[in-house]
Amino acid sequence: MQQLELSSYRKVNDSFRRRLVYHVGVDCGFFVELNFMLNAMLYCLEHGLRFQLYSEDANFGTGTGWTEYFVPFCEEVHEPFHHQLNFHRPPSWGRILGNAVRKKSPGFIFWKTKAMLKSLKGHWLAYRAYGEYVRLSQDVASEPASQYNIPALGIDCSYYESYAMLARMVWRLRPEIAQQISAVKERFALPQAYSGVQIRKGDKASEAQLISGIRVIEMLHAKDGECVFVLTDSYVELEKIRSDFPQLRIVSLCQPKEQGYNHKLFSSQNMQERKSAIIRLLVSVDILLHAEKFSGSITTGPSVFVMKQRMAEASVQAADCAKEMLPSVLTLTIGRRAAISAKYLSQIKEQQ
Image 1 (cartoon, rainbow, N blue to C red):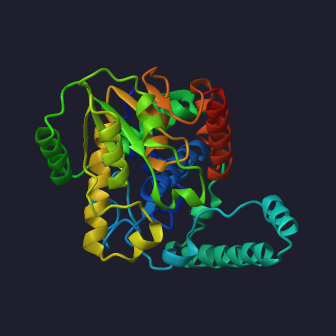
Image 2: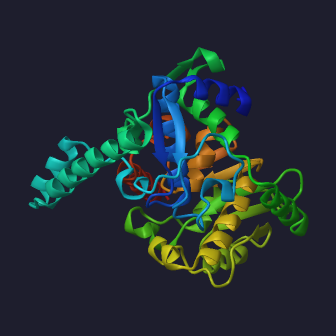
């Protein structure tokens, strides 16, 4: 896989006259937000827009934002109007009207109209602040291109290859977090070759069918004695798979108090609790990125982040989607991915 140097990216990014200020950490989980951000970076490179970041109010931070966990990769801005007026792109009018008719509610139309008015105000305040027309997060195309050609960076490849290059470039954790990764690997005595999985419970049930830990672990086809690192939000599920697979050495950073992640509850925690949880998540995902084998779901942010970068590897599998379908599935909305996941799991159950 071609590597993208940070210095090269900065040189090209800074050469663009027009710019887009992207707001990260708006209202979704960390890896959904990261996915949106990487797509916005590709959009900017494709359209010759200088990518700048606003993150000091990020829902995963404590007031510093991106650089609280990562080494900076671009210029950041700090104007407070971005907090409310720079937001994720709302659905198209077609989807809004379809929802309004289907659910017999004009609320969707009012919400879309309100978003448009907020966007106008945001662009006006951006013009006043920067003295030029500036694009915002809501201006980014909702679906990425299938192919990217950015000669200045030597990029002429598919969306997934381009995404992986950018993801590896921005995934540069601060030294103190990198030290924690080393400490965790040493504490668990992780071997050179180990496997990794994500098992999601909690509020994921509100948007997708939950997958049993047994199904996820079985996708690894692990040998007796194999070490499996588990990212999970449920200590009960962790103990269950340890009981079901005694022949495996299963390790995890999941704590006994974790009974399923709930984003609303997470957002209500104090800043230090949120930061501690995010650092554990980042450490876990970094370990998953380097696992020899991986199994996860097409409906969960960390799994999608790993699979987008490593889908070409035969040892990287989704527990709820056929391997050959991944390229066409991972860029879909969560609703469509959830439907595909549920249908696939239903077919698997019928065959058993």
